[in-house]
Image (cartoon, rainbow, N blue to C red; front, side, top):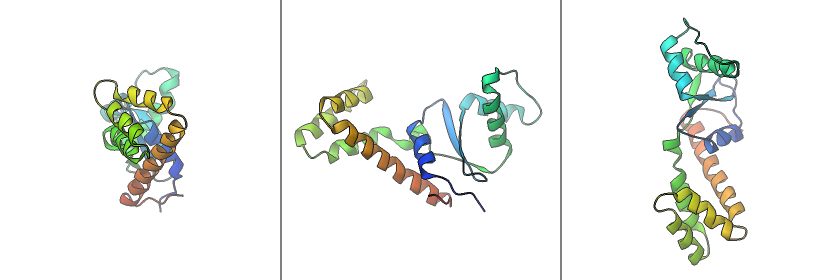
Length: 156
């Protein structure tokens, strides 16, 4: 039977998604592990046969990458392209009670630097930034719960 995962651990991983790193759930321990894509690729190439020359600070991450590649006890968490941060921001803008502020937030989501403009707009309106973080956290928690259900993972 799989270990129970803390939903907060999955949400934390989803908050930090990037192009460079992937996160996985260890079904045996319930721990979330995050590793660099490059190390995963090297682990796939080397298998269990070869040990690359890595700096000391990467040795632990290398061991995790090897466990991920060599076992079936890990499930990949949603990636950056699956989290859809832009859609969460758009949904937040749509949820803002003030039509003027909601429109301002929606407009900030277009063009180059949309993430920065969105955050700048949040900061200009008192109390909105904390509402955004609560909204985003709930959206990520919902995504984490859905992922757990789809992957038959118990969470608390």
